[in-house]
Length: 150
Image (cartoon, rainbow, N blue to C red; front, side, top):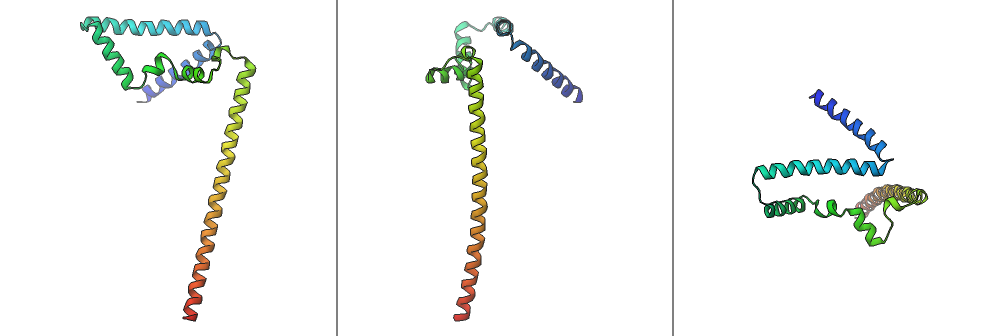
């Protein structure tokens, strides 16, 4: 089991390094990625041919499978493309470095705001707990007074 973990860790590290280097060369990255995808499709195609699966059945099975696991739209169109189309935004590769940095700053500010809101809600919870304790003490005092009077 340790050997498998070591192998997975090694390839994960290697993949991260390759992805990091290729991200600086987007055309080469896209080209190599497309070769990989084509080879996968070629292998599936040959297997389907060997199993004598007709073309119409391949289309139906492929669509049903990709819809069932939620990949049909996100793979062929992509979530970011749909969202950017709705918002009429530029594609990521069309944005300038300044626009990307600005978005990063906005995201950071939103994260800070959420963190502050979390702190405020924690303080509010603590205040409510203190008030509940105080109300219980007052209630106990009132019961004692009622016993003395009653």
